[in-house]
Image 1 (spheres, rainbow, N blue to C red):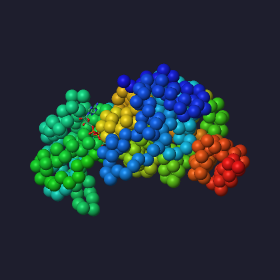
Image 2 (image 1 turned 90 degrees about the vertical axis):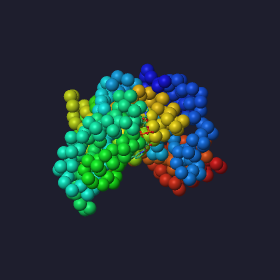
Image 3 (image 1 turned 120 degrees about the vertical axis):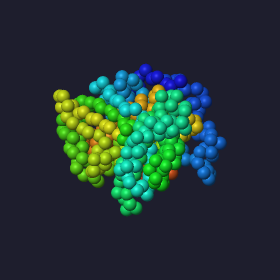
Image 4 (image 1 turned 180 degrees about the horizontal axis):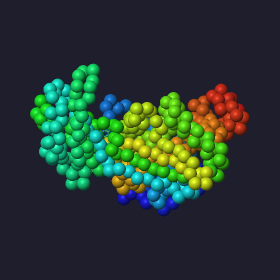
Length: 424
Ligand code: NAD
């Protein structure tokens, strides 16, 4: 049963102890004792499962999971688990979501979860005739593709279309076949790859060519998540900050160096949620960045403009290939628990949530940059990391960090001195 959270506006959540936060989330999301322990107690790590997830396993790498609060998307409240090593990501998302919430929250939508599989045909003598033949056999190809995944078809998914095109390459002309597959609630890589492999011999027969690669494309341009939201100019800090944000957006749209960082900020949010839920972060990153260059130049994945009353309106659109089933989403106990906390019912709802997280994350970053500069907030949170790296025991980490922030000296050498002073 997924969690349905009545209100994600958890005032003062950040001031609670970790144990208190976990208890509150467990209560709000109806987590069982086992799920709560899985998430909150490192001693509960299921090494047996981890050992079978990849090869040559020797251990595991704990990454903190934080809960982003305040998200309201299409009138529904969400608590959003984020796994990241980077300070300030969770706080920034929660804060931006609070501002969006004041103006009605995020309005999001998503396309059907249609993935692309590619079959590369080389040595095709007459590419145009071959492509015509493929088009003529579309019905048979779809039936053959679907035959390898009857469960997916039963669930309303399956192959939807077969398209082909010819490309000129350094190794000669090739015919590239795209199969479009509705993968329902899976990320879909295995589902699509299996279909592509099944169809390859048939495509060789039809075209007289040789099928080489049979693999999905991470540029999932038919599987888009979109979201939009408004932030009042008062929340952002006034008209000048709104203008600064729009100028920051113009900068990204005109300059690839800035745009890389603009889009990285968006993925700070999306990839953290993906990691927390056992999804493939690299697939999302590849999809996002290739989509950003779809029209020839690398562009921001968000757009910003001034709306009614001088408020700020943001929109985002990007490919979001995530699953609630398959991969590590169900086999990893923490991923399963985090999916329960997020409480989405389908991969399309998940895509809407992730698009909203990406938009919130971007707003938070460019607001900070346009208003006071990123380092003020970032270094405040980073101070804790410095304190830990300098060897501060857990009970004095906050004290060391606070002292460095108060002095404006957030540095390893100063942290070591403060630790010594406090120990004395
Ligand atoms: P999967 O094969 O484990 O699960 C998908 C299958 O589950 C479907 O084919 C279907 O038969 C079944 N299923 C049951 N209930 C379903 C439902 N409600 N909706 C959809 N399918 C349902 O997983 P997958 O999503 O096909 O593959 C994801 C994994 O593949 C990830 O771990 C990813 O890292 C990996 N991968 C990625 C790439 C890439 O991105 N380039 C390449 C290869 C593998």
